[in-house]
Amino acid sequence: MRIGHGYDAHRLVPGRALILGGVSIPHEKGLLGHSDADVLTHAVMDALLGALALGDIGAHFPDSDPAYAGADSLCLLGRVVELVSGRGYRIGNLDATLLAQRPRLAPHIGQMRENLARVCGLPAGAVSVKATTEEGMGFTGREEGIACHCVCLLLPKCLEADTMV
Image (cartoon, rainbow, N blue to C red):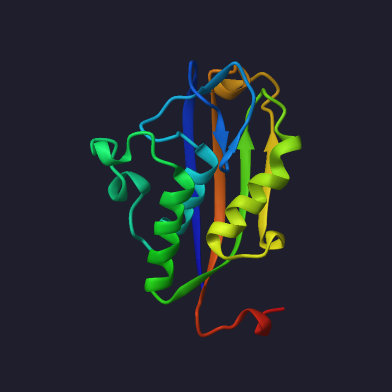
């Protein structure tokens, strides 16, 4: 088994869409980045890549490459999932925590989980997405940005899902 941790943070700015877990969330600001700046999906990708010691998303999808300008992060996640499979592993589960003062994310969590589960080939019950504030502290508390942590468990493909308790 292999365990990975991913982290991502992006600045909130006017004039950008706020995309988290592939869900477009109504808000007066969005996240600044070369791609769609989906911090949740980026943290998931970094956790998966980290579990296999394959570097980070910047090494695989550099912001210097115009091919990734405005890229849909769920599509990039699909490519990372292919890397995981190609290395002889499957995803056991994902557990992510979003850090955002606003907007309220709870109404969107179910769709985020479903999107991530679909792309990763998992049941929604194997994907946890939580959201919390930092009580007005730090850059997320001051509403300057949104951050996300994610941990993942990778299992060898030879361990079938139905043999795991």
